[in-house]
Amino acid sequence: MPDDDVSRRSRFNPRLVRVEGGRDARRLLEELGADETGVAIMSGKMQHVVVSMENVQARAASIIKQVMLSKGGECAVPRDTLLKDTEPVRVLMMGTESQFRGAVRNLGLQPFGLAALSREFKGFLEGTFGGSGTPRSMDARGFTLELGARTLVMGVVNVTPDSFSNGGRFFELEAAVRRARQMVEAGADIIDIGGESTRPGADPVDLEEERRRTVPLIESIADVGVPVSIDTYKAELARDALDAGASIVNDVSGLRFDPDMIPLLAERGCPVVIMHMQGVPRNMQENPVYDDVVADVARFLRERASAAVEGGVRPDRIMIDPGIGFGKTLEHNLEIMRRLEELVFLGYPLVLGTSRKSFIGRVLDLPADRRVLGTAATVAYAISRGVDVVRVHDVEEMIQVARMADAMNKGGVDPGSDPIERGLTPK
Ligand code: HH2
Image 1 (tube, rainbow, N blue to C red):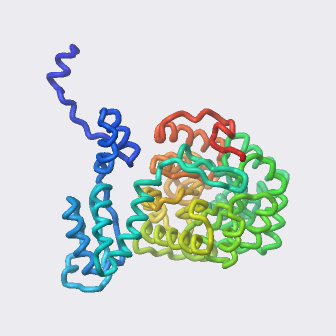
Image 2: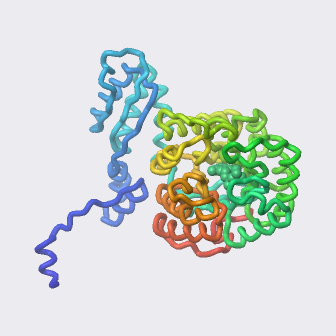
């Protein structure tokens, strides 16, 4: 077709352009040739987002609505807000980054708890528009985890006779060491060692047995070249694991079960994965109930992260995880997946463990050992939503999935399996 025909039929080529976060916004403006100041000013105006806030006094909600309107945004409040006084309501604030930043300054000067709300909101804006998606590094006792530039793959080695997916197979130390080394060779960035199954209905294992299963393995792979995490909620075991060479604690209880865990983390300065679970493994699947599963999980993770920080854990050593399958129905798990970005926006690196889990089995009607493709779908999807670390059993396969998803999502091609090139730099 001659060029003239093209320009007559679609001279202006109108298109919706994709703006997902500040990085997209700045790239678009720079490509356009906007000047530097323009890029700084306009990138904050390119994305319209909705922020939910809970427990706002009704009279304060009315002020938020006025302030947001004065900035050119909006704020939805429940119908009877004007008739209420101090009762708590939820609000939905709508606007661009610059409208929110303008509103936050104004709200800080207002009564009815708005100064406190403004402070929390300001921190939230930094996490949302400043932090998530941008590369950052995390110190892991002699290793540096480079987060954000590409997705890190955490390989699972369960030394348990009863794990739902690979129980028994790596029960022997030698087999477990071999598997961990294979995973690292394949490109795993972290090895996660667990000595107690947390599958639904599982019985707790006594400390001595858990120690016997995990500590010799950690000692045997201490030289493996990537950080090892210990999957435990028991501070005493975590301490022994750290002494044996582990660098990260992965606590599925979200630092709730053992009061000694936060002090230990603060003392050792190691990174922690704070995971959400409703109930305990023995009863967690009996009748999980949430008001709004994503809001409830977000509130929990935020609260537990704050408790850790108050106890002396550095905020830049905290990762969070929604705990797929831990006290959640099929619908809850799917809802969390669909709305993963809401957790990314909390500002902490997000870890996700979907590997071979029963929600995949329920959708595909397949047993655990045939859920690799289902797992691949969840990994690719989660990466497109902004997850930082995927916890998987099928490391070889999921590394391919992650590399491909990263190439599309984050741009740039991963240079290969060299640990330094992969962003995992031993100090
Ligand atoms: N899932 C399991 C165990 N630990 N840790 C984090 N951070 N996230 C998870 O989703 C997660 C976890 C359960 O899976 P698995 O280890 O395969 O099974 P089991 O607990 O039966 O050994």
